[in-house]
Length: 62
Image (cartoon, helix red, strand yellow):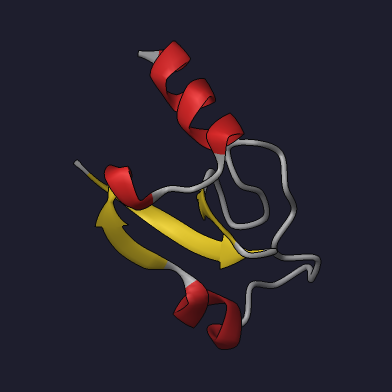
């Protein structure tokens, strides 16, 4: 499956909403999401996620 992913702190995380990743990491601290932040989000395969917390939380939700 394809998920929205973002690279933060040398790891690839799954995007939950416009402010947080699934693991709880905040990648957008601004009130309004800017174009520069949107450009960091990529849609790629789940197998490329390197954050263990994101993968485990996503698998536990299913």
